[in-house]
Length: 236
Image (cartoon, rainbow, N blue to C red; front, side, top):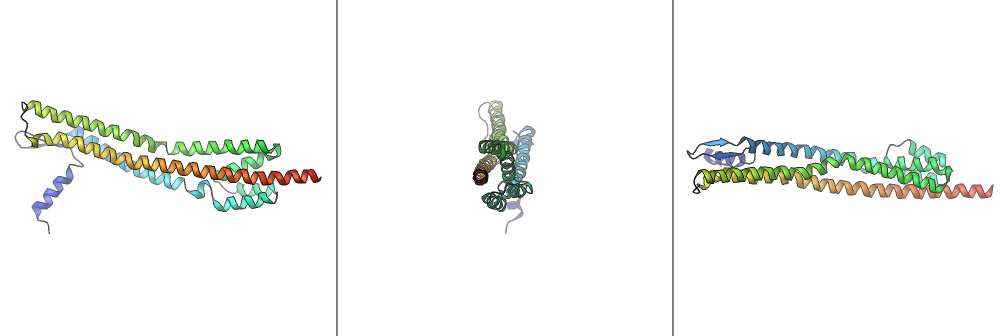
C-alpha cells in the first residue's frame, strides 16, 4: 500500500504532463504559463481528434456508402432489364451507391457511354465530398506536431536562459523545468498527430475502396440493363 508521501510523489510526477513549471534559485516553484497553455491546447486538440475520428468512423460506414442489400437488389432488377424496377430500388436508398446507380439509370436512354460518364462523375463528386469531410483530421495531424515543436523551442529557450542567469553553472534541477516543457509538449504533439494521421489514412483508403466497389457494381448493373434494352430493340 502506498504511503501518503509516495502518493504525493506520484501526483507530482504526473502533473508534469499537464502543467509546465520551473524551479527558481531559492528552491520555490513557479508555473510557466506559456508552456502550460501549449500543453492545454494540445490536450484540447487530442479531445477534438477523438471526436473527429469517432465521427469519421460513424459517417463512412459501408451501409452509408455501399450497402450490400441495395447493390444485390439493383443487380437483380438490372439482370431482368427492368430499368424502372432498378430505379425504384435505388430511389428508396440514400447511399452513395444509390446516387451513382440512379445517375446511370436516368441517363441510360441516352446511351451506355452517357450512363457510364454519369456514374463516374457522381462517384467523383461523392468521393470528393467525403474526402473533404475528413480533411480536418489531416489538418489536425499536420499542425499538432508544429505546436509541439513550438513548445519544444520555448522549453529550450527557458533552459538556456536559466544557464545564462546562473553564469553557466546551473543546477540540473533548475534546468528541469525548461527541458521538461520541451519534452512534454513534444509528447502531446505526437499523441495528437499519430492517431489522427493513422485514422485519416485508414478512413480515406476505406472510402476509396468502397467508392470503387460501388462504381464497379453500378457499371455492371448498367451494362446488364443496357444489353436487355438493346435486345428488345433488335427484336422489335
